[in-house]
Image (cartoon, rainbow, N blue to C red; front, side, top):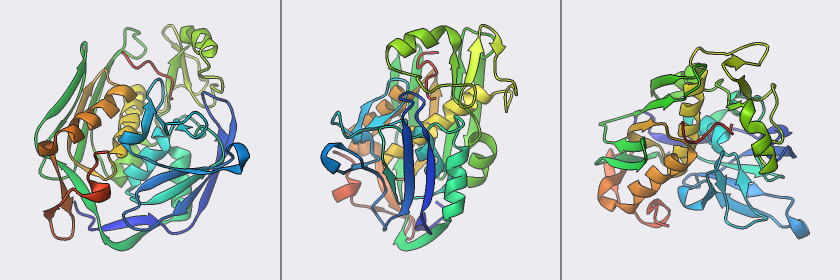
Length: 314
């Protein structure tokens, strides 16, 4: 809780590309936004020229299969939001509006690097309002077979401890522990790419997924081989990317978390499920005002009541 003031972007920045699942071309513009507005997506290009504003909140999540989708109607959703949300969260951007003219955030190179570059181009400025944090007060845990995700209390900061275990030796068992801040996010997570197995591709295509996947945006694995000519960016790039996904999904809390996140063989579904479990128990968290270092009432928007294609189970 070192940064006392909320932040937003200094100016607008544009990013354009194609979705990894839909392969649809899309342009998004990052806009500054006022205090206490959080991150939201302005979905444009809807039938009849309509637009819809969708808040980046756990309560707006409609699907978590292979990516995270927000919005609850067929023609007004935004998918694969996790890498962009990770960039906002990792760099400490509290408030922004993402204008997007298609159904899916572009995959770019499969990491958050291009979104970090866009935020850097826009710049980050402080607002007058105090930053508010969600402080975890007691452990909350969700399980699915051997997999689990949990949030635990901490006095300050946000730590992620993410572990994966794949049968393929090229991935194997990997663990990453990171204390999240702008420097560690840039250095350790932002460039980690999504990954997938070649033997899954035909099944995914038939289901309408991974239509835009290529060696330019995905680490492709064939048996025990990495097919990308440049190889891996990190020896443990797989768990780094899973950690990046967790940062983005947990940003759907609506404010920075103070606590420790632990997961084993998790994924988008369990990342969102642990937020649902946290906010279902009002004794499990409090909202802390960074200026006053005090708890504030959980009312109004702070009540909280109401790639991309790696396997979820690993």
